[in-house]
Image (tube, rainbow, N blue to C red; front, top):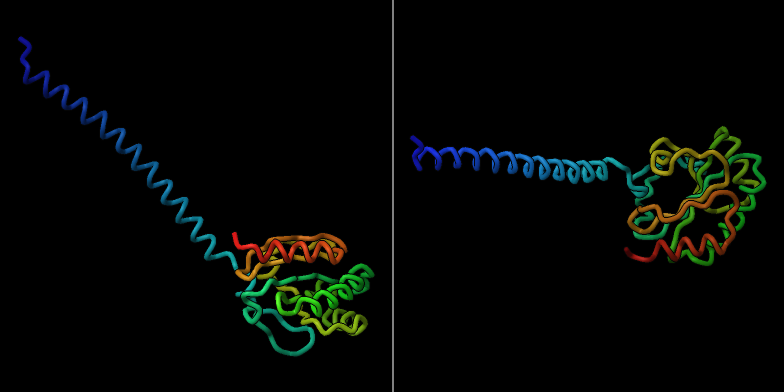
Length: 184
């Protein structure tokens, strides 16, 4: 004979099984979301900020940290020896630095040449801009440099806001700087 107590127990077991399965799914989704958020935060900590990078100067024997430029927009332009467009870019960036020195810092990054070749290129352009040799830490942030000139603009917190491939006219540089100064 069928009693109410047995039916109640059976119903209770089915309910517990049903809800425990649902709770496991909810906890699994919650755990997955927590792992994703944690992984993003962890990846953000591992990704270097442009201001945490130290580079070897092409104008002096020491290594310099870019942290001295923190809270300013940073214009990073890659150049290489015997590149006529790089030469023109450096001349234009000299002018931008002189006009906007209170808002930004322009730095040059030499690539695809020996230290001597890069220094000769700087002497030829008569620049006073800080110039550094490229590094793996910087390339991790910018990605590989396939052609020069290429210019990156970072905001005062070190976030890349613009990438300009080839010769960038002054208007494009100034537009990138304006975007860098907009706080998200």
